[in-house]
Structures are given as C-alpha cells and as structure tokens.
Image 1: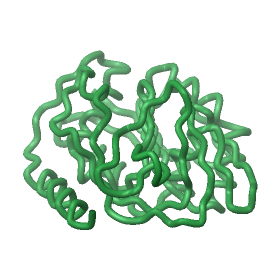
Image 2: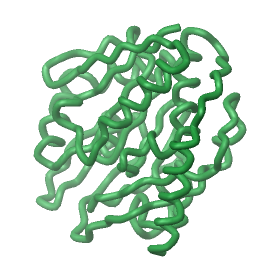
Image 3: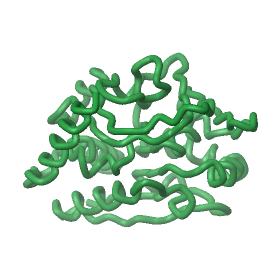
Length: 252
C-alpha cells in the first residue's frame, strides 16, 4: 500500500510545529510497511486532484494567508473541491482551517476568500486565544468504520480569529478546556465527510495517535477500501496524550 500526501503551501503555512503532523503520518505508515510520498504544492502550482490521498494544510500569519488566499482563488480552490469529491482526506490547522472556509476577515477589514469547502467563516478579533486545549470528539465520528481508541483530542491553540460554523457542518468536538472556535459557543473545529479543520497545534497528531490512525485509515480507503491498521506500540504516544490532557485540565 502507498499513501500520497500533499503538504499544501507547506513553505508558507507551517507554524507552531505543524510539520510534526506530516512526520507523524510518515512514521506511523512506515512502521506498518505502508509506503508514503510527500509532495509540496505551493504558490503558483496546481493540485492534481486525482493524485493525492491526503492533504495537510497548516497554520500561518496574516501576511502568508493573504498570499495563499490569492493563490487558492486563482489556482486551487476548485481543484481542492474536486479532490474532496474524489475521496481525498484533508486536515487543516488554524490558518489552513480558516482558508478552507468561505472567508477570513482581517482586523483591517480585508476579506480573504477561502476555498469554501467547509461552511464556516472567520472574523479577526483583538482577543488572543492561547493555551492548552482539550476537546470531546463529536459523537458522530465514533460511528465510522474506524473505531477511535479515545474520545478526547488534546493540543495547543494560539489564534485571534473567531470561527463561526454555518448550517450543515459539524464541530470536530466540544471544548472541555480552552477557547476553541471562538471562545463563546464551546465548539472546536469543523468536519464534513473526509474534511477536518481545527485550531489544535502542538503539533496535534503526535499527541493523538488514535486520530492520526483514523485519518490514515480514511485516506487509504480511497484506493484500498476498508483497511485494518496493524497495532503499534504506542506507550510513548499515549503517555504524551494523557500528560497533555492532565496539564490542560490543571489550567482549567
């Protein structure tokens, strides 16, 4: 088996250790004998929606988001939509999450158009939402073919954008500790079908091996049908998960 991964705008949108998520995907595949190939697709380049099984879209500052928003509009919004229709999986973090929505409105009032894949929009605020975050995953995620070993996700958030969910879109989870999408409605992230967005840096996948495997299995399904992943010795990963969860709860 082989997993083709696109690191979308990875040279522009890669902040707070987000490339650790790519490393986690690679290693967890390699430990199982699954071949991986990671390709950077950046400004001025077009996505091949038939090629990639998994897209990772990390976070960035406003300046980088302006550049990426313009490029998405010219090059890749439609192609990324086609990739989703072709059963590719997307994980987007922070700025990438915002640009999967309809738009991000900056503090200067500039509206940066997104890909419109998730029915969300984001408005900049003056409040910085920063700190450890723990969420309870949306219950609908627990009824898929792949059985998650935990209902929790842990991470670290650092954003001033307030993301609001529209109709027909589910939050990734409910905030147990932290701010989440906007600091008001106790939701964190969003998901629809095979597309996932959230504010969890940290990076998120090393601390949440169950979610990493969930995404891998979903991405492999595109070419291989339902896949049962070989169990790994995850003592260190789960120790990191529970340590992060304890630390988050202590700051509540």
